[in-house]
Length: 398
Image (cartoon, rainbow, N blue to C red; front, side, top):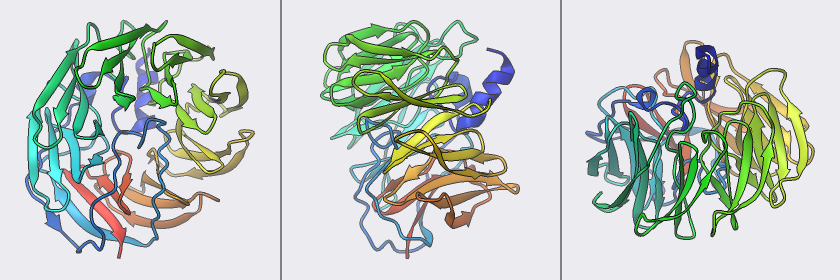
C-alpha cells in the first residue's frame, strides 16, 4: 500500500486500530495519582467492557445523559498519550494501556490496583466476569493474555504463529479480542482464531483469503470479520463458513457493525448493509471518493465516518438523514439513548461534543485543547475521554 493510502487510513481513526503496525501504536502512559474535581452524585457502577461497547460493536448503550456536563473527576497520567486507545470500564475498574504496560485503576478511590508489563503495544482490552483479555504485539510476535481482573495475575497466554502481512505490513495485526459463549475471538495474519476463554487452547481457526483488517463482531451464533476485500460470516461454535460478501474494494476498518438483523461494512468509499443471516445485499450508499468506515448504530440510524465527517443513514434504505462536519477530525462515537458523544479537532484545539441523534445538531460542547483522538466511552452516566498529556477526564451531570 502506498504511504499516502496509509496516511488516509490513520486519519480516519485518530487512535490506534487493529490492522496498523505495532510500532505506530506505542505510547507512554503511567498512572500516578487521581484528582477529584467535583464529587460524583452516582456510584461508578455501569460498564463499557470492550472496544465498541459489546460483541455487536455498534457503540450503542442504554445510558441517559442530560447536558450540560461538567468535569467530575480526573485520573492524571504522567506522559503523553496522543495515540492512546479508548479506556475499558468494568467491575469498578478503569483499564488503560500504554508505555508497555496495562494499568487497572479503582474508579472510586483513584488508586492503581495493579499494572503488568506487556510486550510492544496493544489496544483496549475486553473484560468478562473476572478476566481481562488483552492483545499485545511487538515486531513479528503477537500474543493474547488472560489476566485476573482483581490483581493482574496471568491465567494464560497464547502466542500467534504469525502476525502482520507482506502488504507493506498493512493488515494481519492482532485484533482487539471479543468474548462470547466461552470463546475468545481474535485475528492475526490471515487467520481468525477461537480460543477457549478458560484455558487459551485453540478451539478452531478460519483462514481468510487476505490479511485480516477488522476485529470480530458477534451476534447469536455468527462471527463477522473482514479481510481486504470481503466480509466473512462463520459459525461461532464450529468456525465453518456460512457466507461471504466480496465488495472488491480495499477496506481497512475496525469492525463490522451489527444492528438487529443487519450487518454493515465498508469497501473504501461505499457502505454496504447486508442481511445478517444470509449475507444478501439490502442496500449500498457511495460517498464520492471519501474513504469511510462504519462508526455505530442506534435506533433507526447507522453512523458512518470519514476523517472529519460523520453521517447518519436511515437503516431501512441507506439514505442520508444528516451530516456533521468539523475542520480536522471527528472520532468514533459513544452513543446514548438520544445523543452521540464524539471528540473533534478544529480551531487549533480539541472538543468533546454531544450531537442529537435525530438531527446531528450540537447540544453541548466542552473545549479541551489537549484532548487525544481516542473515542469517548460512556459508563454510569459519565463520559470518559483521554488527553494528550496523560489524563482520563470524566464528565457527568451536575
